Amino acid sequence: MGLFSAPNPADWIVSIKDDNLKRAAVETGISIAYSQYITFLYSFGNALQGKRFIGFLGGVFINMAASAFKLLQLQNTEKLIYLSVPTALIEDTKLLNSIWWEKEQSK
Image 1 (cartoon, one colour):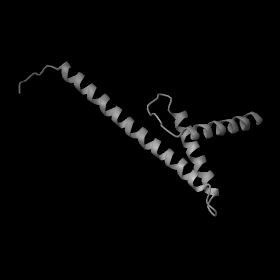
Image 2 (tube, rainbow, N blue to C red):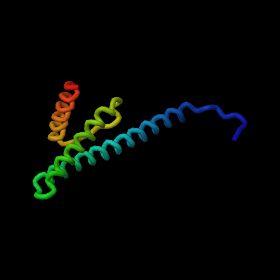
Image 3 (cartoon, rainbow, N blue to C red):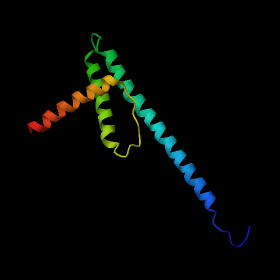
Image 4 (cartoon, one colour):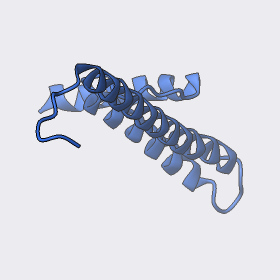
C-alpha cells in the first residue's frame, strides 16, 4: 500500500452496475409481493362470495384488493413496480373509479 492511490474509474462503473442490479432485484421482489397480496385478496374474496354465513366478507376482500391496486397505481408515478393482477380485478377497479368519480362530481 502506497502513500497515494489513484481512483479507478473501472471500479466506479462496476459498482454502479452492481447498484442498478441490486435496485432492479429489490423492485422485482416488491412487485411480486404486492401482486401476490392483491391476487390473494381478490381470489379469497371471490371464494367467499358463495358461502352461506360469511358471504358478505367476499365483497370486503374484493374491495380491499381493488383499493390496494388503485392506491399502488396512483403512488407508482415513477414506474418502479409492475403489478400483475387478474383482469377481473382491473374491471372492478374501473367500477370503483366510476363510483369515486360520481361521488366527487356530486360534491
